Image (cartoon, rainbow, N blue to C red; front, top):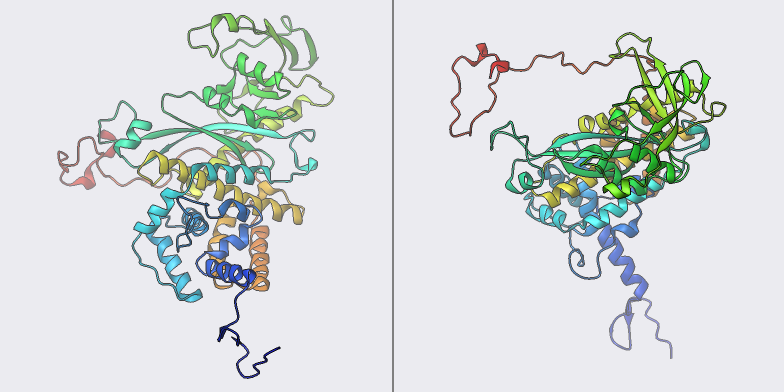
Length: 489
């Protein structure tokens, strides 16, 4: 018999309690409860580039229980910390506390202890997979590729510093000319960038003793058949050019440590300052990447193309240099197009500027090598996510993605994040805010300044502080330091 309860519809008469909740209702309530604890603003903006499947709680172990600092919340809080102007843990904890106060009945302490513990529980392998997904999810048109529809990978290295802790010093020791306790651990970083989008494809980390070539060899899996490798003269190596050539990857690098060939010693003259040459295998040396017997199995010579480039633009350090390349067909790859492509190699310095200066990756904050690696990965993930926004905007409005300001995109994202969080559960409002964000990115165009000289100099004078050359408890501050010349220390 059906028992209807018009005045108490929620009661189940057979058991005198509320009707049993279905599995779908229970899961829906759990999802809503989880959403109330997440910084959904960033998720709404970057969810297409960073899928939710990577941020699900683990089945067991760390991040297996639903707490305020779940795996998803911790990741997006870490992401928010990276793009924030302050960049401190206290800032992002206060941001999450405010978010919970307006979107749920949860409360959160301003202490950073729980958040820092949750960050340590993030698996480095998960962050590596997320970074890999962000780099592979770019859909670049052939027309956007810099040379003949082929992907160009530009490679360069840089240095970073971090807090002076014993663990960091053991992993990345400071330079030997500094006294212990007066310097900072120094990391050497080598990145592979996609020249068309500016996205990071892969990276390798070493210390001050690591040369860039061994770090490049750790990333050989990044290169695919048909790619073009673009590097500076530090990558001028017979072994590496041959190894990439065997994978179907062409190279464009400036000539270094070898005497240029002349028209009398070349195989064929293709055009003026454009020669087809033989590059002889160098003799084996102790620091060679292969044992002597394997080294002797390398080809005795490589067939290359040597292009002399004359620099007429004032302000450049060199007036001419030579480019070595495995692109041998002058009809498909003219000497001018190759020289113009090498001129674009300077873009990699601008990519590092966006990372180190604009996003403030120059000085890392974490105090252990494990957390330093996670922090570095989060910087790369955030950088690639912003590059996604820039490329998406440029493609929609038929603009050059390299002409849209990365700093302008980051500033617009910082301002939009607050409104994203306020409208986290309203899809139509999120869409409106996102469209406004993309419009801000679209209108912030970098002026076209071909051949502009950008010397690495400081215009603003430094303050006349002493240099720390002794331990803090031994250091004596000089009186009248306003008259002290810092360079004399």
